[in-house]
Length: 607
Ligand SMILES: Cc1cc2nc3c(=O)[nH]c(=O)nc-3n(C[C@H](O)[C@H](O)[C@H](O)COP(=O)(O)OP(=O)(O)OC[C@H]3O[C@@H](n4cnc5c(N)ncnc54)[C@H](O)[C@@H]3O)c2cc1C
Image 1 (cartoon, protein in one colour):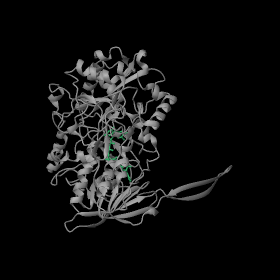
Image 2: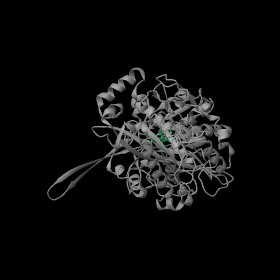
Image 3: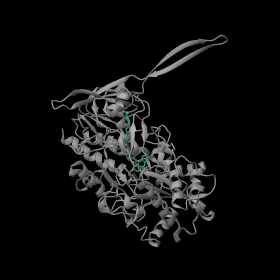
Image 4: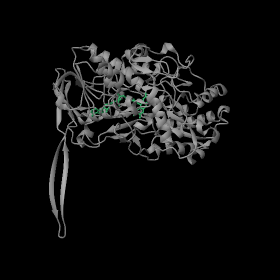
């Protein structure tokens, strides 16, 4: 059941306490409570999502964040590689976490990604040979809502058809789709067609159709799927509006591990304390009323384990608030270090987002979605169509077509850099073709039609960090993704811009695209100017990973062991995007789902 107040808890002990009802947390909650004898409490800082139809409508994903009540409303620290800019760094704060607010793009990463995890962790079961078995358990591939013939648009053997989360191809054809496909013939050697980019042992390289976590035109999140199937079980309790502030040491084992089985959190049901004072100066007297909302802390205890699934920013934040982190950092903030581990909060890896925007000739302006985005009447008409029968423009996410590419192996960048991709099937960069002006946080211009080809650095070599600002759990952490800090990263982005300029210059777009949009893009005609342009516009594609990374049991770095237990602890595990030692070559929620499915198996085996 879902409860809203700590006072509704019927016990303060549970077999498992899961922190965060996000992508991973709800997989665990659902799988662990399949055993009716196991009790689980999930603590989620955000609210319910049931009454928010904007979450359900795929195309409205871009309106859910940043800076909304579904978002943690974080920002990056000034980014040296991006002209010291500061920008929003959204993270879902609602049942379903990222899976409720993200752009629905669904993939798993390549077998090369997973095999690297297996090798690095010393546990071959993180390799693809084992991990692929979770796809049929997780995925329910369903036909697109427009019922079009999908032959040649995906490879059935790579998918599951009886799992939990719905996945589908675009359910509304766009006029640019056929142009994109024409480029895969016209410029085939550079942009070949790829029938399926879900990952695994099929190469990701090439251009093809997007697969989304949606079914019947509606978002399929961990909340609408994994939680929905478990929600009626009496052994599962989900408390929303509960902000976890730390995990608490409850003892030690005979082998010297520190046990952390209690969790401290703050519910929303605060008491308001009013202080009234009078300030009198020589010529005025002011009455001052200060109201402070005091949220009492509540402590719950896990009989078996506490599992942190609070995401790549908040999991390392909670660890550090709990005394698990770099001792020097913690002492500087007057936090008592319990486990000294300098790997906590470092190794932050993320992929970038560069909206390369083109203007569309007036004759085709109406084929873009810009009129829908800028005109509330047109948008409302499409919302009504979606409400009526789940069809139309809004059933798709930001793009129907996308592609993954590599920097050519003879490129000079490899003279000074080794290849960070896990293998030849794994890309260095991605392109997403959006049929409108797509630049998160920037409103569409009042007139004109646009085509945006987003480019994404998929295999970054820059690494950042998540550190505490203070010992106050309600202070936002200092998040520094260190974007484009290496020669390799900027070289890949430069290559991506040059490549999409060739893509846009293909015959298929000659009667469609009129120009590049914006002076920085127009002036990007030399390598140096392209770099300026890249640094002036790049932000994040919201895939932070690696801040509590998995390593082998004997490694002298890393935060969790291959079984996801926190090093040096007993009763404490991490299951979320923070444990990936490298960012997967993919949009990250699919890899997180597979990770959480395997974690459920590991946790059940340990019972
Ligand atoms: C705007 C956006 C677009 C994205 N687009 C895509 C996409 O198209 N495709 C894709 O694959 N991936 C996408 N992602 C990334 C993907 O959603 C994440 O990689 C994935 O959701 C991470 O899962 P997680 O379980 O690690 O964390 P999350 O899903 O973020 O879950 C963490 C949960 O913990 C809760 N929590 C955090 N701190 C506390 C606390 N102190 N107390 C209680 N609860 C807490 C949070 O509120 C949240 O519900 C996107 C992400 C965003 C933000």
